[in-house]
Image 1 (cartoon, rainbow, N blue to C red):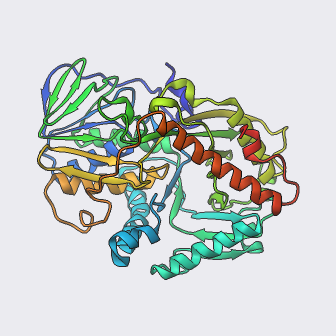
Image 2 (cartoon, one colour):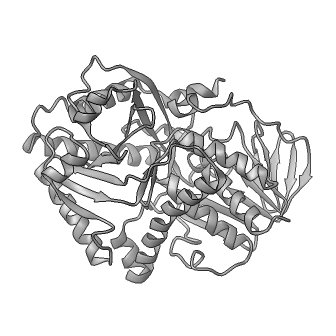
Image 3 (cartoon, one colour):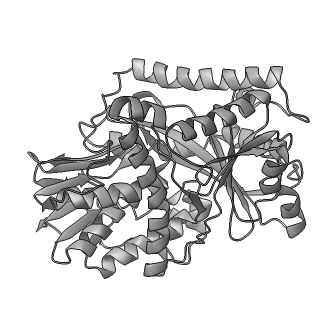
Length: 458
């Protein structure tokens, strides 16, 4: 396997991606972490920083950043899968607001660590602009701002943009308005995760790659090469969680795919905008997302690949030609300057983790020593940092503001057995596609091409 072929991001790191040595045999530790993505490495980082005497082992089936951490859209955002209204209904307005404020602080914290550790990951805190390109989408933008105000957020957190203000940030076709938040940074995700792996090793953490875990149990992580015995075992496997024994229904692995253009000339960027490297999306139901990379490409992604029966995760699922074609067409709809003559140089994808109640969680069962974090629904670049800090406090027995947040020790219900799981997830995708298509038929932006839904065959 050529790890460089997994994504544009992994192809453009300044290292050969040679795997670290695997686990040499049975060993003892204070904490063993399964998964060398953001969640596992942030947990190791904050544990080692708080107590350098801890013996910490990280086990990774492939290499650090093999999963979503090396393939995502590069948004270090304050987005949280559960929005403020349901959080407030379950936990009260104050705790919901505390959760959102913790996410805001998380973006700043990642920036702080990047600077402190000298991680060159193209960090640029330009915020996020979410566009409204139909009247219905503009209504959603207004509702999002009203919801933010109702729950204690101010203009400094989320502001409504008129058509001119939105286009000044991101000059997409048919923009009627939008919203802007400063709480996001564009980042090169593979450089971040690889830099983080090096940072934890400098702090004495042992990272073993090409070491698949075949079983998790209280007090141990089992691999073909040996058993790591530890009183705390952390599951940090996100979209790959269903590949672990007994975890098939814990999260649904839903695929998100991306494309990246060749570097674009400045004249093209003058027509597109994103001068501050703002990340961007719009208010359709089916999520799209993009960023201007540090080397001048437009990296653009979206949901739309099918959920695969039995929560299967396979390398060939990373590539769905009709989804790549749809993403390329939508990119041209948004920015006509990116016509068919502008080449796409990279296409890739991978699974993200979705809990049954759409609620990310972090926790530690003190009776068994088993800890977990995940279910980020694609918002894991920032949320994983908060998870790592929170797990470090929980494992060390500290009671802090982080351990009091409402997602701590939340238990999501299991997904339904098959075939109900396959029917439910794919039906949900189809409903969202159909809703977007209906909105576009009744309120079509100018020069609209075929809809995303049509291109995906729904």
